[in-house]
Image (tube, rainbow, N blue to C red):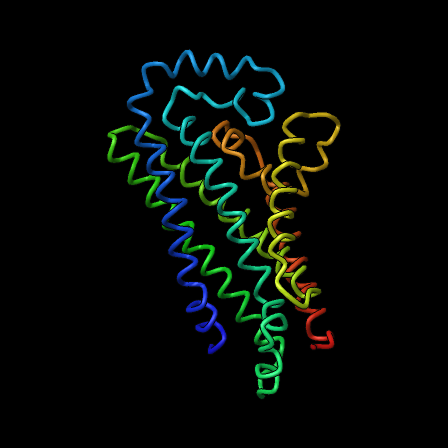
Length: 260
């Protein structure tokens, strides 16, 4: 488990920084709710009547005046985008970083198979992403308790579970892409996460692109759908399959790749 521990140590500072920023912003947003609660009903009606804009961001389904709707809108955007960028950037550097940093010559001369190295890197990715989500959930839930609001903890837990799954799917896809790169692909990682986010917006607009729900993880990690009790089983299974396919293809290719 040497490579697993090495990746955890290498990603430790980044995990702390991203967790502090995302979790801190979520706590601040929740903390603002009591001061805004008086005008929430009018804002909820306003957002719900903004046509395609409301549909694109799920504002036509969320009760923005409630703490759960406010959480899903404000904290959901912060965690949805921030967590996806973290997972994408972390995954993209796992394999490409070895060649880009010229450490592959040292690493792959040891009597350890490439498959084992890659699997340990994947395990470290899963732990880092899970760690980020645990901290963010603690910050969000702690802030809700601090302001004394009552929420449906089942819905909140399901939402955070879906976001974790979304980030793992994006991480698996970026891991697969990184197997083809010879140096870090920061821009590519950010671009892929952003592309999936905008694909989720297109699905919400319902312009004949409903098939995208099987492509973008933002469909099943949408707070509006989860809090409304929609059935998302097919999209979740498709997302799990897509993430596993991306990671599996990366493992397969990297074992056959000529390293420089």
